[in-house]
Image 1 (spheres, rainbow, N blue to C red):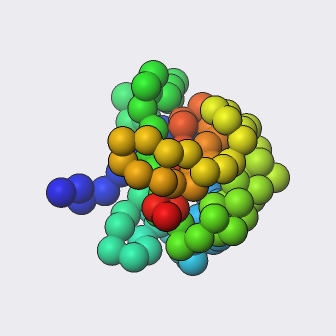
Image 2: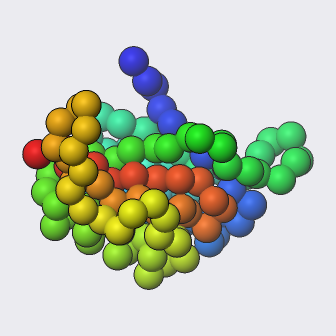
Amino acid sequence: MFSHIMVGTNDLKKAKTFYDALLATLGAPPSFVDGHRMFYMHGGGVFGVSEPINGEPACHANGGTIGFTCASPEQADAWHAAGVANGGTTCEDPPGVREGGMGKMYLAYLRDPDGNKLCAIHRM
């Protein structure tokens, strides 16, 4: 359904440091920078980070979350730890098991340095 997901940043260098470390925990190689934006390609997906081309400041979506699939709870914990160690901030409940209408999942949430809400998810 999706060709790619892209979020905005106000500091491409800081975002690269954050996302290179965060996405390495999922096996993604470092991004390649293309001028004012960068891309990660892994597992058939494309994730991009871009300085806005309209010259306005980047901002995060209220109510928006981008989820990254993890192979295990341990990988989700490593993802979360890498994010926090590289400028992210934890949000929501601490990483752990949640049960709901979509079944049992291990979730870890954080915000990137620009405030975008991210989630690591392992479906149990």
